[in-house]
Structure formats: C-alpha cells, structure tokens
Length: 173
Image (cartoon, rainbow, N blue to C red; front, side, top):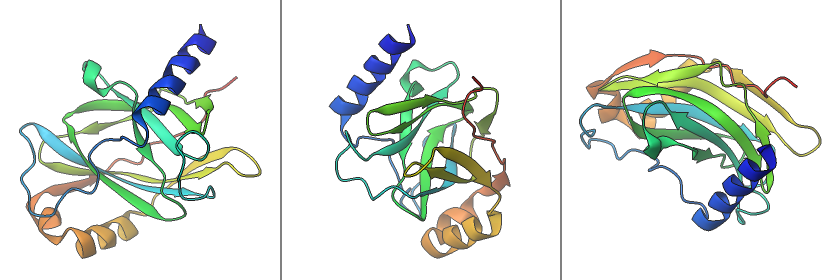
C-alpha cells in the first residue's frame, strides 16, 4: 500500500511540475474570507530546483477536513527562502518530504493552525539531502519579522502575527 501511495504522489508531482500554492502574498491585497497567512523559512543544501523530477525538495501538507488541501506542497528554493502563503483557516499537518523521486514520511502528530486574518509563523525548516537526510526546525521569529517588514510592510501592519513553532521530523521507524 505504501508503494502504491508513493507512486501516486510521485505521479502527482511529475504531472504538476512546480505547481504549488500561490506564493509570496502581494502586499496590500486583502485575504480571501476566513483565511490567514502561513510564513515559513525554508533552507536546504540541495541546488535551486530546475527539474522537478530530480532536484525538487518539497514538504507536502494536509488541511484537515478539506480534500482540496491534500498533498499540497511548498518547495525549498535553496539556502535561504521564506514562503508566504495565504491559506484557508483550519488545522494542517505535514505528511511527506520529497527530494526528486524519493519520499520520506513525516510524523503527523505535530501540526499548525491557520487562523482568519492572522499571519502564522511556524519556524525555519532546514532540510539536508545531499550527504545525509535530516530535517530540523529553528525559531528565527525575529528574522522572519524583519523579512516581512522589508517585503510586506502593509501585510505586517494589517494582520496580527503569531508564532507556532511546528516540529517537523521523519516518521519513526
């Protein structure tokens, strides 16, 4: 069953190319009703993705109670990148990490909650995939706020911001 699931997800990634959630909220635009904003730092030692089948590093996540938010993913863009993504207000958890055609199951016990009209920072996630496979989360809230202040000043003054450091780790074997 796990092999079938991995094949289906791999096919999904291959067919969708680099399609991910809308990224980099345009400063000053209103959020859709009952939505908030996810902010996460993403850091990897993998090269910036040019081919989704060989070098795309992504985290797949699931939104509870909404089939539209099953296996959506955010893509790492090199060593230092922040994803700023509007999402419907609900609970989410990470499901898988991918690197090219390889997939690792993630511990689903930890998640995060997006609240309406709220910016939710969940941490800076580091993914090591070149010489070994490792995943970790750091609290770099001050850096994230500085990033938002420089790139999205209107958004930062329009919405409240909260910190929910979300542990992201591989599923125990």
